[in-house]
Length: 103
Image 1 (cartoon, rainbow, N blue to C red):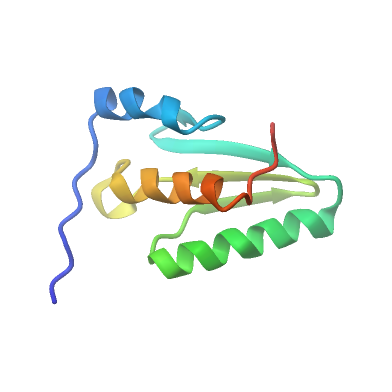
Image 2 (cartoon, one colour):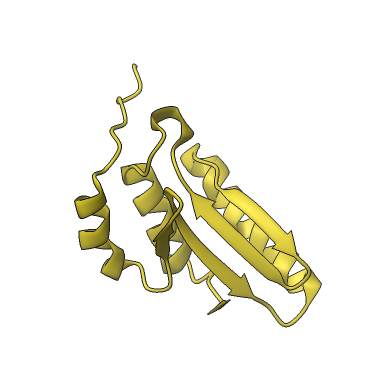
């Protein structure tokens, strides 16, 4: 079965839907959110959970780990923009309760 062709969402579409994703921002062409944890091991467990979700969705975020702070950036590189897959992964991260205090 052929993969569905992804289409980048317009800036207006993204801004309209961004309120559905509390804590996420649109910056430098990606959906971004930072998370702060009590300890470094808790930050690593969070990254592992996000990684498992991303692998299942076959959609992988950019992840930056700085001690207890983790920053995620969601962008579909194939279309050089934000797609439905990015919106869905951000919502899934929130829904699964893997979110913590935003930074």
